[in-house]
Length: 171
View 1 (cartoon, rainbow, N blue to C red):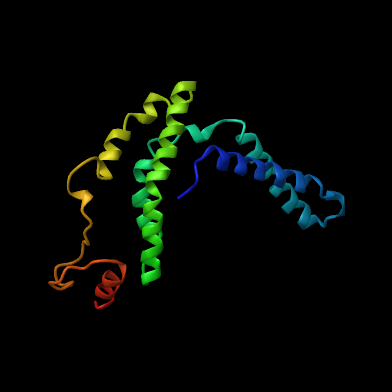
View 2: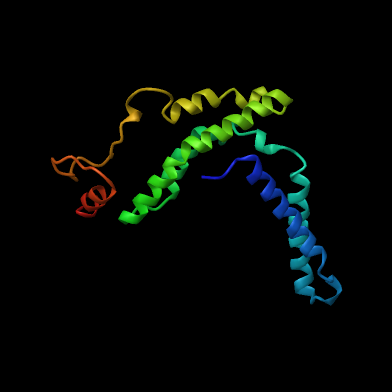
């Protein structure tokens, strides 16, 4: 999960400035026509990144398209889990979620305190979206494996990544 600490945000911004400085140090006149086009596109992108960094968009951690409420489901969909190591790596990422949530919450508070918030119209559907991702309380606190009835995981309790991997591979 992305590091949302102030130090990490500043490192990313400094990286953007460093990349732009390195691009500007290249003598464009020495490049071929094809490389000039690549240079222009690369420089445009780098300048756009530095320009964007002037606005504190890190304070906007929630909108109608994405936010901390969707991070876990997006993570679950994007991380491969075929081997024991894959499952262990996935669990390591999940264990980072409390830190990530704390950092995102702090950024949201800072945004509210400084008046940098999404427009109300953007946020009007967020509560429902959060509910679609599990909300608070209820059975989503208990891990489960959803699978077709005809594919049995057996009667024994599956505990740990290795056991789950073995059970799923048995299909």
